[in-house]
Each structure stands twice: as C-alpha cells, then as structure tokens.
Length: 110
Image 1 (cartoon, rainbow, N blue to C red):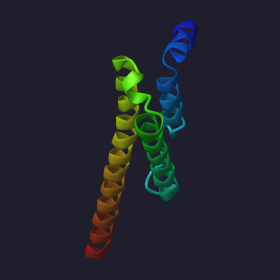
Image 2: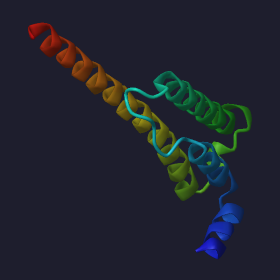
Image 3: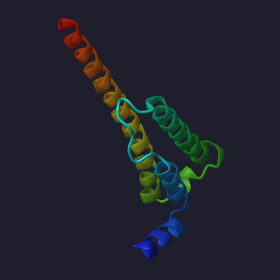
Image 4: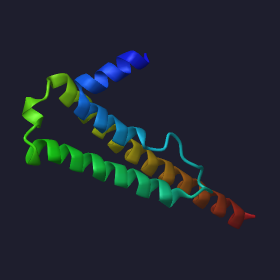
C-alpha cells in the first residue's frame, strides 16, 4: 500500500498536500472534562489552512482548472472532512453541556 500511496503523491501532489493538512488533525478528542477549547482551536486552524490552500489553487495560482477531476474531488473531500469534524465537535460539546445541566438539576432536586 505504501507504493500506491507514494505514486498517488507523485500523480496528485496538490491532493497529497491537502491530505497532509487534514491528517494533522487530532484523531480523537478528550471527554467533557478534558481540554476542549484547544481542540476547537486546532480544528479551526486546520479549516483555515485548508481554505487558504484551496483559495491559492483557485485564485492565486490558477491551477484548479488544470487539475484532473479526481484530484479536485479529493481536495474538496478533505475540506469536507475538516468541516464535518468541526460540526461533530460542536455537537459533542452541546451534548456534554446538556449532560452537565441535567446533572446539576438532579443535584438541586435532592
């Protein structure tokens, strides 16, 4: 698999760079008691970097229209992964906050 991976880097260098931005994302995050804001900052930074990379390809370099469709699709999918992780993290935080409020209300009832 590593030979196919290295050949895709050569044949799709912009998609490989896009993937490197996404792969730098944390693969998991701590629970509600953990350092949550650091994860959001990290995800926000990765989303910003990927967006800048995409803008560079489209606006500054004019490379976007020259890329094969498969490579453009891969780059867009990487951006979607970052956006999806941000949404999941937001839902995770909202669920954790709801649980905390529920536990506080139960504690008040005692």
